[in-house]
Every structure is written in structure tokens, then in C-alpha cells.
Image (cartoon, rainbow, N blue to C red; front, top):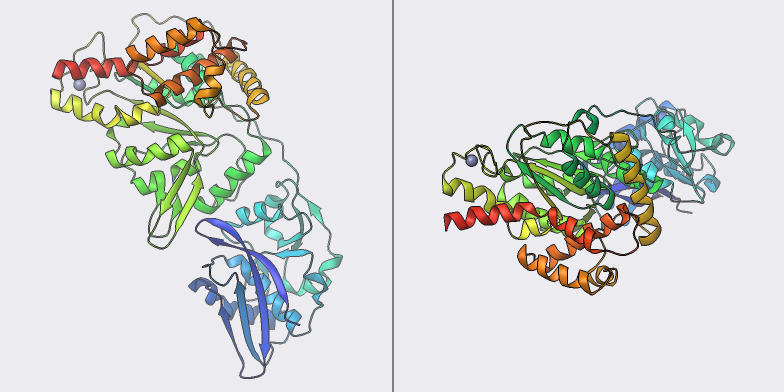
Length: 499
Ligand SMILES: [Zn+2]
């Protein structure tokens, strides 16, 4: 019998099931690994041999051929070593094949035969939890991490000499761990006034609308966005696991994500770093921000090609990365929270200060974001320096509770988070009456909204209706939603001055 052992490897930053088959053939002493293993895995032959010998097993005096299936996909992952060693022991009759059927083997080996943790193992464990009928065999070092993965059944190994009595080892089951409370440093309470901006960002978080704030330096744009991100509702278990998988694969993280991710790539980041890609396709910031927020500060300073490439994930919430050899799709369901000065000196939209930039400079920044990019933003907001700052009438806690309430309302109606995926027909149906239809038409024309931009604004109006606990979208919600379209008007006036 040729033993076949289930393990999990990686391909293009995804976890893939790998079946290990071990053939013992008469012939010279040696071992070859076939089936598109990466070079690191080929180098594990010596470790496997040494681990066997140092654990009191014999090394078969035969030609060992290890076949990794599926044969046509390149695989990586040091945690396949335990499966290969187990296969050799079964093929050589040292342990019973009975243990293979209901287990998944995950772990790398050291020369002395101990079973070791590997980078990115957390993503493989998250994947292993999906096999209801199998128990993961994992390094004892990874036990704490595994204990936090709901539904994962596992046994732990210190060393390969425990393999023959695997069926006697205790079975543990992972459970959701209580979330440690982490207070963010900045809350709305530290920011005086700015009621309009706070509400707009709270709407963005609750309805998952992409938002952009622009204004002169010193208006607190970054603080507003950082504080707004802490209004996010808690992640569901499914969201936590999804996000953890990509963090583990791309960043070698060894922890489980507990709260909505907040990613803030610098404007000098390459488009591969932001979007994903590179010689070996890897997920970018947009995928690490999945289920959370992508914060782009100084938006107009990002490269034009990065902003262009962002259009796909902004709209479709996934990202396709095409390489010469293959195409990869990663999730990218994030909420964009962007901030920017409108120009180099920062005063272009100011009501109190004068911009000192040349018209060409003014236009070059705005050109990057006007049109197709701005079309995909649903909340545009200019912020002004406020002469007298009033204490806020509503607390951070008030906003947080409001966001939770709106999120629940949306989820019970749409069956998922956010109003950002509602289509035109669904939104039109929810307009209250003829007055609203007419108002939508007039305002869309005045604000020069494309079809796509109009849908975005109606989605925001839907979130406002949820905020006001209304079943349909009324006049007042539509009007307010259009108030969050102020940047396009300011851009228009800059362009018409220049013309
Ligand atoms: Zn300026």
C-alpha cells in the first residue's frame, strides 16, 4: 500500500491541501521529492533523515520517492515535513496506517526529531479547522495559538517519537478567546466641535462607504479618521478568521486578528505594496485591510498609477493580480478613509487663507483624484479651520453605540454589513415618493454626479435613513447625503478659474 497523508501547503499566498504519497522502491538508498516542491522543501530531505535516525527509527534502505499532489501546482511550506516523515514511517511498516485517515499533519522538523512551529502556520491551522472530520496534528509550540481557533480539533506533538501512540494523545478543541479591550489613543472626545465631520465619518463606518476629507493643514483630519476607525463594530468570528489568514500569509503574523484592521500605507509605497503583486504575487495593503479600513493620508501625493489601480478594489471589493504565469484574486473588502491637503501649500480650499501654489500645481494634484477616482468615493468632505471650537454635544461613546445600532439594522435588512453593495434598482425602490425622485435628479445634475456617483450618494442616504430609524429614504436624508459631496464643487471652481 502507498500511504497517502493529508497536509496543507501554500501557493500564491493561499493555503492549499497537499497529499503526500510515499513510494518505497528497491534500489539505492536515497530520497527524492517530486511534485513541484519549492527549493526549501527539497532541502528538508536531510532534516527528515536525521529526525528519523535520532528518534530511534531506521531509515529505509530503499529508494524513497515522495510525491506531492496536486502535481501541477508549486508548493511551499515547511510544515509539510511532518507529513513526509509520517509517510515514510508508514511505508516502512514502523507505524500503523490507521492514523492517517482522520488526521492532518502540520509541522516542520529539527535534526533531533522535535516537531517545530513554522512561519505562517496560523493560516494553515485556520484552514485545518474547516475539515470537520479530521484532527490536526501540530507542534506543541503552536498549542496556544491553536486554542484560539474556534472549531479546530488538534493533538500536539513535541517530537516524532510520539507518532506511534498518536491515537492515545488528548484531543483539544479551539474556542473563541475573549477579546482584550484596547482603548484607542484618540477618540472623538478629544476633538472639539466638528459635529458634521464626526457624523460623516460615523456614517462611513456604519454603512461602509468610502470617504475622503480634504482641508488645510491643522484641521485634525488624521485624528478624525483614527478616532472614527475605533467606532467599528466588532468582527464576526468568520471575519476574524478570514483576516487572520491573510495576515499570517503575508506578514507571518502569529496571532489572531481581533478587531477591524486599520492599514495606513505611506504615499511613497509602491503600487505592488498597496494593491498587491510583485514577482511572486503577494497580497497588498488593500487585502490586509479586508474587513477593516484602508487609511490613505496625503492622497494627492500617491502615484497616479496606484490611485488608478485602486479603482478595482474600491468598486468590486476584490483585487485581481495578473502575472505572466497566473492570475490570483484576493479579497479587498475595506472601507477607504482618505485625507489630503488640496494642494502643496494646503490652502486651496480655505475660506480664511490664500493658496500660494501655481495654477498648474493646483491642477496636477486635483487631476489625480477628480473624475473616476472621486466617483468611487461616496462621502466627500471639506474641513475648515474653526475660529471658535465648541465642546462636542455628542460623546465618542454615543457615536459608537449609534454605529452599532445602524450596523445591526443594516445587517438584519441586507443580510450583510454595509449599504455599499445595494444596487440602483434596490435603492430606487426605497425612495419615499415622487418628490424624492425629482430631488435626486436635480441634485445629481447640480453636483455633476455620474451614475456610479449617484448610486454612492443614494447608499449614503440609505445609511442616513437607518441612522434616523426610517424604512424609506426621504427628502431630508437625500439632501443630507448630497451635503457630503462638497469636494467636487470646490474642484470644479478651481478648474473653472483656471480655464
Ligand atoms: Zn496651495
